[in-house]
Image (cartoon, rainbow, N blue to C red; front, side, top):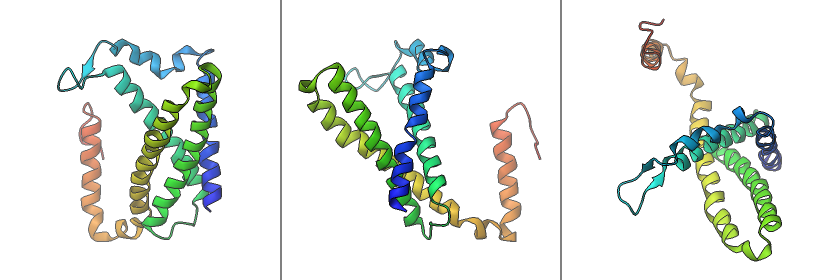
Length: 184
C-alpha cells in the first residue's frame, strides 16, 4: 500500500508540469499572471514582516492545486485500505512524501542546470526542511479530516441527525449563494 501511494503521489506531479507547460500556448491558464496586479499591495503588521499580496495569493493557489493532486493520488490508491483515521493520515502523508520527492528532484535539477552546483546548498536546505515538512503537515491535516469523513458514514445515516444536517445544508447554501435565499 505505501509504495503504491508514494508512487501515485510522485506521479501526480506530472499534471502540474503539463499545466505549467501549457502556459506558453494558453497564457490565460496561468493563474499567476492574475496575481501580478497585487505586487504593490502588502499584508503584514509592521514594516519588518510585510509580505507582498501577490506572493501570498500565489502560494495559496499553488497549495490548493497541490493538495488536490495529492488527494487524487490518495483516492486512487486507498480504496478499502483505510481501517482507522491513522491509516488515512498515513496514506495522505505517504502521497505527500512521494509528491515532495519528485518536486524536489525537479527543483534541484533545475537549480543545478541554471545556477550551477555551487548554488544548491541554500535551496537544498530550505526545500528539504521547510517545503517537504509543509507537504507532510498539510497532507496530514487533510488525512485526519479525510479519515473522519470516511468513518462518518454510519453516524450521518442516524435518523436523529438528518433534520439538523438538512437545516445546516440549507443554511450553507443560503450563505454561499447570497442572491438566492431559501434553496431547498
